[in-house]
Image 1 (cartoon, helix red, strand yellow):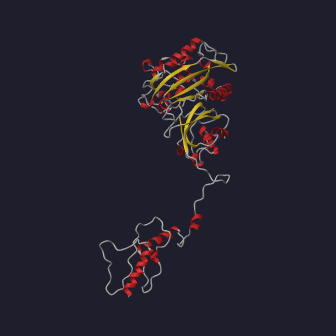
Image 2 (spheres, rainbow, N blue to C red):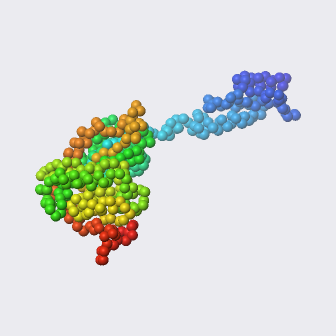
Image 3 (spheres, rainbow, N blue to C red):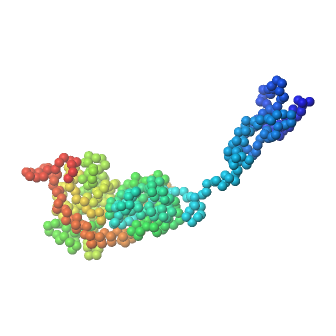
Length: 455
């Protein structure tokens, strides 16, 4: 009778478990000799990802039996539930909800909506007077740069988080050209990742001074880098035409007017720069045989002069693949020295050789980055239906207006009050343009050291 009662209890237990257990095929339930048979162990058919309660096998022991230990799987499930905060465990779901991470809130108390960052380019125009160049010097507040004001405006407008302003690599920031101290730009292009908020240009410009403006925005490919993707850069140098007045037989003041013959000679000298040359004498810390000193100039010429506030000015334009520090200012300075009669024309060709040549550097006031070019990028992505070509045709009116309102007046007024060009012209006689002409060296003539020595 005892055995039949146990079998009946075992059947009831099997039905309670849904028939999910039984002896393994081909095996018999082992019984210890002299011991009452107990129910077979519970073997779940397919373990669920999350159990909804204790296994029925953990119910109180049946009559006539000692305390039956819970199966190993059920005990493990109970411990997991206790750790995860399942009801009846060590922690409840109510506590878990209270401990849930709260969403980050915006300053107005509303939860911050996380927007995806997109790679864009910005068309930037600025007057460089009073700034120590374009590139930001992180950690140094002594020298103010254009990027200091630009990054501050990006943060304040909500385009980038504050920590991106401290570490610009986080937003993949890159500029096309690092303009020097006092140099302006009408078509600088920077690439970065931002949140595309509503009215983004208006909001950025509202936090910028009037002499720095964002004139355009375009979406670009995710891997776009404005410096590496730039094929060429166009600068112009604006100077008073009395810089071309000959030192011996022309007036040296504002009354000078550039003649057709002098303009033709200036353009003939500027055309000599076209092509590939070693410009190691037009920058610093470059040797004559360094490959990085070789630069390709596509075009260089001087436009027709014009009069502003009683003073005549001219604009020299130069387009090249890339330029080194002070290169354009020295290119202009050497041509001015030749036209004024301080240097022979032969020094131009000699400056590309291995000899060290003393090349004067024109003031930075009149130098302006006019535009940057992305021909290869436009050919590949400009007409793919997803991206716009980077040509800024629609922004030309804004660029022209900015030059007329901020760049030209700054150059003219500064030249009138500070006379930077006139002061620099007075230093040309101290330059020795024949110092490296070994062929002309005679008794008592100064002969320079080997190439690479300082001037």
